[in-house]
Amino acid sequence: NSTVCAGRSFALSRPAFPTIPFLLRGIVIALWVLPPNVYAQSQSTPVVIEKNGSNGRNAGGFPFYRGSKAGDKSADISYTLNAGKTINTSAANGAVQIVSRGGKGGNGHDGVVADSAGSMGGDTGTISLNVLGNVTNHSMLSGAHGISVSATAGQAGTRRRGGSGGGSAGPISLNVNNSQISTASRTAAAIQIQNQGGQGNSGFEAVGIRWSGSNGGQGGAVTANFSGVIDS
Image (cartoon, one colour):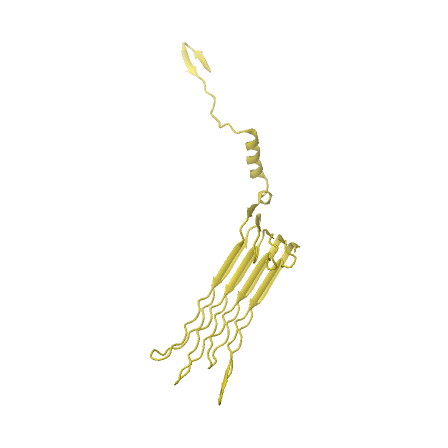
């Protein structure tokens, strides 16, 4: 459009606004106004976190005599499934699977002149798991749990002289808050937690010689808090 004023012509332009289709504008407004759990994110792959301690060094014999070393402790694990997020998958071992293993203790040495003992298995670190979203596992396998948490401390090193024991398992903390945990398999658990100390080594007995085996390690404390729905 244009107008004339005192013999001069001026162009009048309308401000340029992007043209947004009516339906698209409605979607944008809905995403802005609605709470996050209305348009929750869905993940089709399982959550798998695994931490392993390294195995200890084995003892050596002639000509380089050396003692064995203990297995390493596994690293701490901390994971949070945020509110508004859903794990919707088909997994053989758990839609959310947390695994921690301590390293095996180094083996001792059986020598003609001298023996050396095996070493202690490694401990497992702390596991902290917070589930604020929903978890569904569609697999029909017996081990297809919703949430699976497993910690196993390291086994003691072996040899006939005995030695130190298995490693100790660290604490596990699970907090499920206002969530739904579902499994398709009725032989699977919605939530499974295992916290095991490491296996000790066996003793040895021969003519005139006897060595005792070593103790297994302690299992760690487990704390679990749940609110929500279980369908399993």
